[in-house]
Image 1 (cartoon, rainbow, N blue to C red):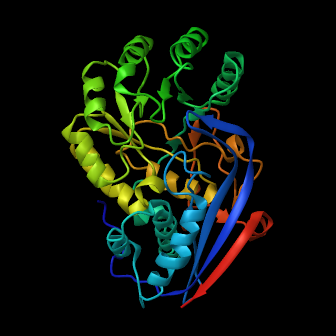
Image 2: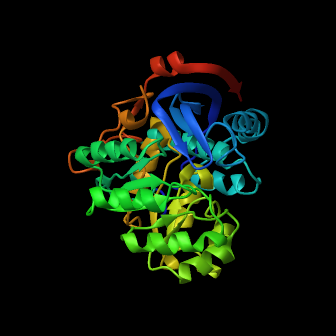
Length: 380
């Protein structure tokens, strides 16, 4: 893992505030096992003894169709366990505190939010950028678009056309049984040269191997998470029978899972989601382990609001990531966001991360208050 700057520097946490915010999506986002119509997220605001404020975000999907973590469970984990535990320490440093977080099982999304808030407070106090503190060189981040399942093929093709014209450098479409081979064939006919991948969100089993053998014909960049999260042997068997790389998402939720993936040769690509693995610190550990095993990596998203997305962009600047991120423009997903400026892509499909202290994006307290549905304050 890259070594942060000023590793002896500690911060003293004075208070932590939780803000639960809900922002409507521009349109419903449907995947193989559920639909989301609004972003229900928890913002974590850490204030240090010198008045510095750091922000993090715990951003599981609503409901439990993607993971066992939900906004409700993450709120409980933060308010009843993680924050009181944090406030027991006199001084902390994020690159050391995450080791303590790793000792607590579960609640990856809550941990990611707290880890992000501590990192943000840490870099703001030191007056450096997040990527600099993480030992990551600055570069523009290529962005790819993730597109859900629609009622008709024409709707899907219309969305792909829209986002390709906007410059996105890779297209990911969701698939499910009955919405797969014919859909990919239609997309390929209309967009023969687009960099295309499919994401099954664990909707298939090894009995569906013929479907993936057929998809193998369409020159896909990768096939993401075809089987259940713990189906490592089955994924290894499928990978041996395909030219197309398999990508692990739900199967790559920890270093332990990653080692099982490597053992069974169950993927050639790893989607590292900061939220799913428990924070920036853990994501860097997983990147190092995956690259040591010659696996390619990229930064995924839930998607998140701007706080977590901005921090994810700093991670995505790491040269170890070889595919476009799923982090997209703020306006791709939401009617509004809580950061200023909003995240944007240029006509070539790149996100240029603002320079300066922290993430380069400011949290709008006015917008946080506007979209908040609950708040809780904890004082050391």
